[in-house]
Image (cartoon, rainbow, N blue to C red; front, side, top):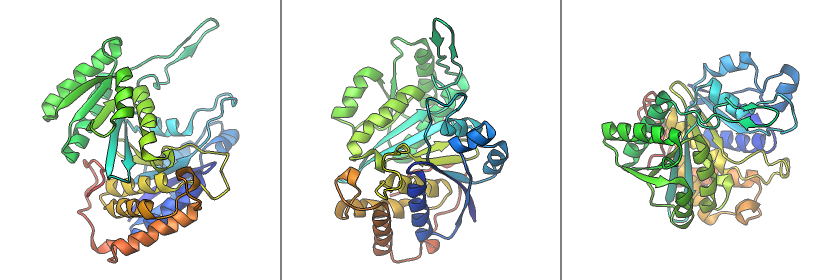
Length: 345
């Protein structure tokens, strides 16, 4: 039995996480969910977005399923819950898969998740503010090896996106990425970040596994969602050596919270990535989502009129229609450690 921590968050977070749990429960009885609280309300009571006791319990889990939380600008001392979790759980690698459900293509982006301008080493003075763009050898090596493993798993190459023609930190990062790629036997193609944004808009599907540092990866992966039809369908995984956290990349969307129209697909596919990470097979969920999107009524962000639950139940019906056998009879070998959790075809 796999133990998964659940942090639903606020806004539409609880709605889409509930949908993802319902889909997981439709394909397996081998995952048990444990709910934890985190976010602004916890901060108001305890001065932190998640308590240390809960963090220690979460570290004992096999994975985390996360919804969405709001990070207010006007709450002094508040630190983002998701950034806190990435730091506390040492989730250094971010993998985003942007799907094209029409043609079965994907944009795959690996983002360094712990350093760069998000290192948290900035300072503000009376007349200036400084943020530190931190790139360490350890951080560069481990994200380069992660990207190489993803590329090998997919039979692909790496497109390394940087600004090494200007930034000293990217010159350092580039040298390490190329060293690791040579050791791993993976082809690396290079691109300068500003010109690459144009390529990502015009021709997004031919770049293999895109690798970049934290800020550039954040921007590129959000930009790439335009090719998925909605940011609401894009899943992501945050990986460390001992645990991983899975979340849809959309925000808390308070304007539609409680209306029952949030797109659950991003959370559902994040749960599918989680099953792969656990050594189970998430492809049944991916195939059901692809089939449903092609013929089913979608939520308003994708031009439809369906509710969150209607889409969820439609995907579950596709699961049953596509494969009437019990998934528990069809397990892959359950080996989690050392395995990159990619969608299996």
